[in-house]
Image (tube, rainbow, N blue to C red; front, side, top):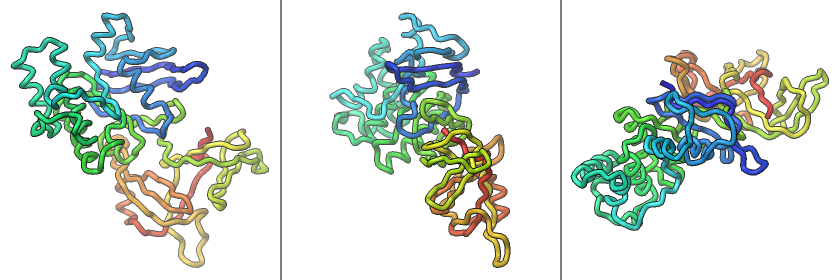
Length: 341
């Protein structure tokens, strides 16, 4: 079953449109990552999915049913979906009472409350601090208590807004593990926002890329601001880092942002002396996992060509070619890899 279905959804504040999503489907039972830079609309979309902020226009379906924002229906929807904010607010009481709060509101019996609170705190590794004052906890510990508080309400969907943005590296790894366990062991659908592509790859089964309020079809990993000029043949031409000349299929001229599709850039081996040189040369500076395509495992290879460019290749290809960090390689960037905003 589809968890959410979006068609023509918009959100505006005054005259400013901050979300404009033509179509988006989120599947139930897996972890989705909303990936994009600050200001791309991630948090706004999350608040709409949490039924805390109504869309300005368009259609939103939840678990196959059209969105009904009547008072009674809205209350039922909010029991199924819980949002944990980037900097959660905890009550000035104990950790136990913070996690217990939602259960008391729902009139759950005391014995059941105690069992549920203990189970949820164990799930996030905070049961040893059950009696501690919540306001004394570190940022990472507060985030884990907030997640436990959300889980205590037995939601169908858990929404996490930048869950590791304000925590130390140790807690980042712990929270990522918790997110994976929630989805895998508890069967809860998870949707999180992040601007960290590596994190999105580690914890989610699907990545949705947002840019300037729109869901885009590919990863905007290679984003640059440039000036597009006429190439002399009717196409656009732009220069990156003073040396990388790109041709773009666009009629736009002047200042613009471009992205280079990482799946359309090709890695070639650096030529031997006497051979024709590739258009661009650089060194591999990082190799990391990338979202799979179907059942095919893939890698993200970062090449320094004066600017860092990410290229996504099948893992089998990278292994066959023996690509390693430090290798000198050539790059081919076809014009259909260049997207202009």
